[in-house]
Image (cartoon, rainbow, N blue to C red; front, side, top):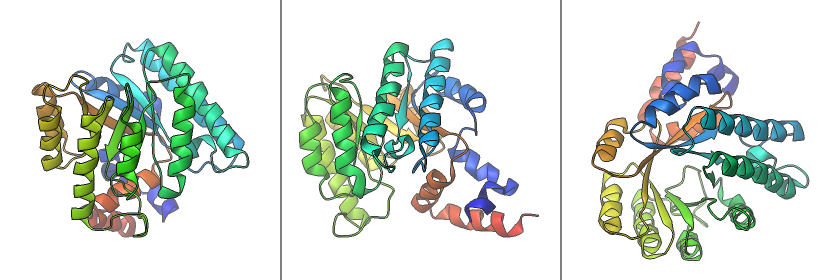
Length: 290
């Protein structure tokens, strides 16, 4: 299915809704356009790298991205997000390899004058990811962490991460997790999100509120009103773009998570899972292509 999808010309309009091109030259105009009224975090797509060469290529891609952001005068409004599995965490000695790659990316970000957020993946990687974030923060205290409200552990993680200067992106989570570690019902995930958000807003860090749910957006605006440390709202590229523009026009700090690259299949499939109405279009595209 992956090979069929990646070669499907009729599928491209749907993929392009969520992915800003397959290379940096295609993505940069989109980034620049969004940065006129919003903040942006850019993800060079890739995960579960299978060899050292792939991990090195990911680091090189981020270094090139950060150099271009600097050259285009965008680094003050655009940061980057990175998955540790793209840096080789799943390889032998992967923890050290991923940390070294992330340190290289953070060094390049510091030189550019911007920041890095370390993306969260499935629940089996949570402890290792947060450990890496803590190690990175020894030299780069602005490194952002990500937590997922669908996981039962996340309230405790929010308490641990809510210290001074800590940048924390709270999302619902897009991985299919077992009931032993995660809330499965939408109402439970939403209730957990509200509890976690309240903890982060009461803390001393910067809550980065990643949700498209209008009720949770309004909760964030209410809790964040007059908050000394501020906060950010975050949404995915291609999801509720009109709402993004409206919130930015209202003076809200609105950041768009923008992915690009050839390794879009895993990211795209998670977007389909979040938006089931797209599945019919996806399947039609596969079976009707020439």
